Amino acid sequence: MIRSLLKSLPRLGRTWKPLNFSNPNFTRIPANHLIEEETLPDYVASRYYPVRIGEILRDRYQVVGKLGFGASSTVWLARDINGCQYVTLKVFINSGSMGRHLDDELRIYQRIEKGPKNHPGRRAVRSLLDSFDVHGPNDKHRCLVHPPLWESVLTFLHRNPIRRLPAPVLAVVLQRVFLALDYLHTQCQVIHTDIKADNIMFGIEDDSVFTDFQQGELEAPTPRKDLDDRTIYVSRELRMPKEWGAPVLCDFGSAVPGHIEHTEDVQPDAYRSPEVILEAPWTYSIDIWNVGCMIWNIFEGGSLFSGYDPEHGTYRSRAHLAKMVSLLGPPPSNLLAKGASTQKFFSEGNFSGGIPLPDPITLEERETTLEGSEKEMFLRLVRKMLQWDPEKRSSPKELAEDEWIRKHW
Image (cartoon, rainbow, N blue to C red; front, side, top):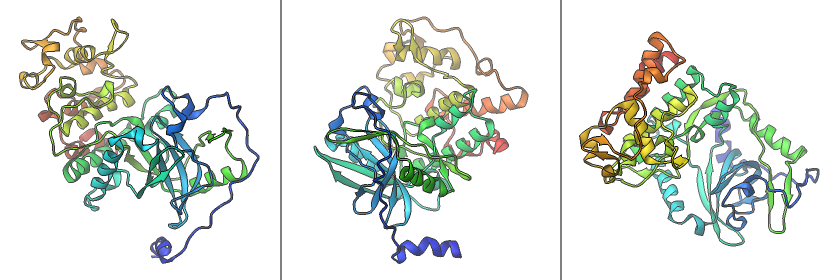
């Protein structure tokens, strides 16, 4: 009762006062030393909005500190001074550089927000609290406002010296991802297309993480580099929360509507499904294949299908398909018949991609850390996803109830 009353206080007119982040005692980084987004291969300063710690966007979101950066955005912790809560701001590069992709992502989030709130997978998908445009020196920039999260599964994975996710943690992550996909596929008609360890983040049930981050920025400001037209800040980490929240599926920048047929090239290279590589029509089940590949990567410590082609020294579709054949056997004829690129790689059902097939190997041979019934259950789970035929892959709802996941939940 008291907690509900406290949550209603912002709606009753309570607000936060802006804070003063003008402490000059920070480390100054030389102008010729590249940091953060400046180190990206295609970095162009004028594309980025020059966010400053302490500034207030849209008359309500005060920037507290930098959480991270990428090729298309920077991410910041902020105080919603009207709503009396902490939020994450994702500030994109200028709209001219983003093109139609910018509005596509917003439309996907809007589609997600219209879904039923009582579906069990709704809370396993990152929410969008607000969106707006801010005008920079060269163009406008889209800003998305989300509830703040802690760190990604990939970052968590790197905390483990053996670089493998423990079975109980993996089970929790998978159960949440499958609930999220059931919600996205059945209620929102959305295909994610880009499920990987750094797009799944742990929630935080401990607001002291954010107040500590804020106090750290007030008392010991993060190092930065001051330039004529902007300041480049070093990202500050959130400390370990006392209480974690459940994993959440994030980043819908590559997501597409599911009610139409697709043939475009999507997915991270190592996670590309057979129908995507063959340029056959694809739909929701590419997400299931994607998760199957990701599981192996974060639990077994390596990729099933790297797609590395020794002749070219980089990823090639032919090397990817050759490895699939060696591990899963030949693809079904009905799939090959649908692929616009089938003739590049197969002739009369046999692989003809211009490189030798690797020696056949089974999943049992590839999996070397489990034994007995535990190994059998885990591989049954993997096989439910890694099927050549998209129609034979299990649904997210079925996978959320898998025996291996329930055992370790």
